Image (cartoon, rainbow, N blue to C red; front, top):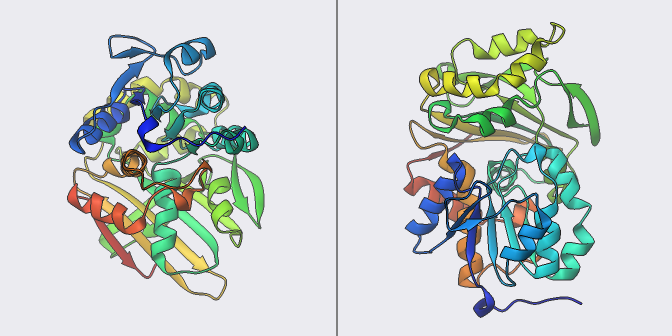
Amino acid sequence: MRRDLAQDALNRIIVLGATGFFGRLAVERLRAEGLAPLTASRRGGLDLLLDAEVPAALRSVLREGDLVLDAAGPFQQRSTALVEAATDIGVDVIDISDSLAYAARVRELRDRIDLAGIRVLNGCSAVSAVSAAMISVSGVTNPVRVSIFLAPAARRTANPATTSSLMDSLGRPIRVLSEGRLATRRGWTRSRTFSWRSDQHRRRGYLTESADAILLPEAWPSLREVDFWVDTQVPAVNRTLASTVGIPGAARLARRLAPVGSVVAKWFGSAAGEFGIEVEGGDGMAASCLLSSARNSYQVAIAPAILAACGIVAGSFLARGLVRADQQVDTTALIDYLAGLGVDFIKAAP
C-alpha cells in the first residue's frame, strides 16, 4: 500500500557517516540552514549508533517520517540494506554516492521504492545531481555526448574513504556509456586534456567509472556517450598511478595503499578544485560548464543534498519514488547557493 507522508510527519533528519569529511560538512551546512540534524555512525560516540549494513540496527533506530542523509562511503562497498529498510519503515533517503554499482543495485528496488511512497535521491552529489544541473544549464537540448571532469581539492577532501573511492577504478574493468550502451574499459588506461578558459587552465584527466553512465541517460535518453575523468591534483601522482596499470599486481597494491595516499594528498595536494562538464548535442551544438574555487570547491559534492533536504523539510520538494538526477535540485538555486559559498560558475564554448 502506497504511503504518503505529510510534512508534519517528518520526525528527524539523520546524517549517516557523520564522522567522515562529507558527513561532518553535511551537518555543518544543515545547521547553517537552521536545521537540527542528528549525527549517526557505526562507530558510536554521536547522537545515534547506526550501521547502514545491519538491517536489525536500521529497523531499531529509524522511524517513519525520518529523513536520512547518507554520507557513509565508500559506496562501492555498500549494500542496499538502508534503502530496503527505508521502504519498509517509511523513511526518505538522500545519498551522496558516486558509485555505478551502487546505483545499479538501488535501481533494482525501483518498484519497491515507488510503491512505498518514499523519496530516494541516489547520487545527490556532484555525481549525478550536479552533472545533471550543468547539462540543464548548458542550453544543449537532446545531448548525445557528455564528458565530466573532476579535479578534487585533495588537500581538503583526502581521507581513506574518498581516496579509496577515487582509486577503485585503477587498473580494473570499468563501465562507460558508449554508443548508447554500457561498455567495458580499463580504468586509468586513457587520458585526455580539458581546457575551460585558457591554456593556463588545461587539465589532464584519467578515465574512471562513474554512476553518471547510468543515471544521466535516465533523464536524457538521447545520450550515446558518457565518460568521467579525474585529475588527483597531487604532484606526479596521476602518471604514477597510470603507470601501475601495466605492471602485474602494482595497481592492486596501489589500491591497498589508499590510506597512505590520503596522507600524501593532505600534505601535497591542491587546495583548489574544479568540476566541469562538456556537452554536445545531436545538432552539433556544444557547451562547457565549470564550477571552481580556490578553497571551497568541495562544497559542490554536498550542496545538492543540502538543498534537497531543505526542500523536503519545507514541503516544497514534491517528487517521490526513485527521483531522477535532473529532478533532485533546482539549477538556479544550486548555482546561487554555491556562489554564496565561494564557488564560481563559468559557462563557455569548449
